[in-house]
Length: 191
Image (spheres, helix red, strand yellow):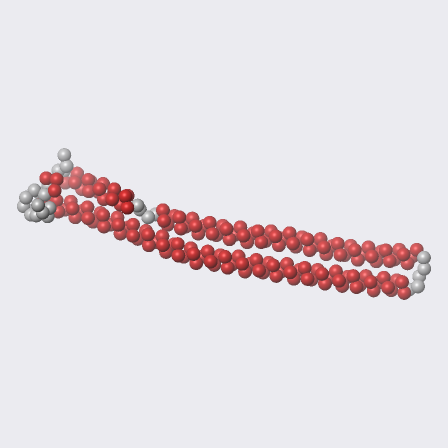
């Protein structure tokens, strides 16, 4: 028996035209739901692909920032070592001048001790600055890591949201059935 046959009673005791209208409504609802599902899948896949690119960009940015921080730290350490070396030479020259002045006794000893103290204070000052720069470097590296992880987590959240927007096949079918029952009830023949 053909459901779309004109004349005789159709589906659920409906007339043929009402049956055809009901089936057409079910078909359109199902097609619309499946199209929405397909569009949501496509959007989710695009989000995933763009997130992969953004994640690579975030990794590259982190790497470049960390390289710059590392180079800056290295330059600071080199400059500090050169300052200490220069101060040591300056201290040795000053000590030799004191010894060469041919002063005798405790005065020479006090002048030499004072010169050594000044040089030691300078070295300690440089070492403290260097240690502070090292701690700052560590904080900066941790900052780039946190920034990267924050960006990566945001991208993962975007991906999860996009995939959560995809209606399940069961929900599409349930929506189609609900819409069909609603259409059938509006025709007024479902009793």
